[in-house]
Length: 299
Image (cartoon, rainbow, N blue to C red; front, side, top):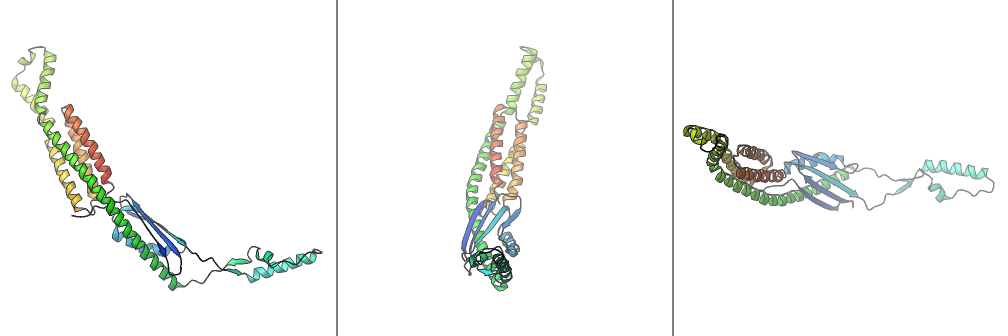
């Protein structure tokens, strides 16, 4: 028996890189017709995108997946003086102090506070170190992805129980419809006789040949014969149960199969010749709609 997978899930993976940078991966997925990945990566980490998409394609079949990477360095950036900017600011400050009688010479902290004099020191990029960081982040993403797969599997187990229950309900309604359909020809004959009596008066039905009545009833019975629809519904229930048992990758086939369920239920309602059968048909359509909604969550 295979494992039924949902397309809904969430996973989180956090840790620290070798250089002390803290990271957090958050990966979540929802329903989707195909497989789509939306990545939110910090500046400078675009090279991760291709390997992450490849890893995702190996583990998942369907779903809209969003993955967010957050990086945080505890170490504050080092400040460095821009010599040219400092020299220019000092020259201007001294010229201004000389022109203003009694003015104090410029103070160091005032000069350093001027825009452009102090700047964050940007270290040279070590390509080997950056490649190592990307490998660590990719490995962490793989762990988050496994967590997402496990979460989708847990949701899939719940879905399996829900879908199985709905299939049991549909099968029971199908049996009730089959029982009710057996009495349709007799009900149609009785209804026709009542209508003839209303039109022709008491005893008027005796003037209608029994053979003609039989022909009309047979024609009505043929038009309202739902045995094929009931047979196909039974076959669809068995096919759906087989898909649930197979598990992995059942979503698309279940999508198509629920459309067939809907078609047969609609035809059954349109052919119904009794209030009771119509009521069963409406209950059947409601159960099938719930089945369709839940099946949309299956990978």
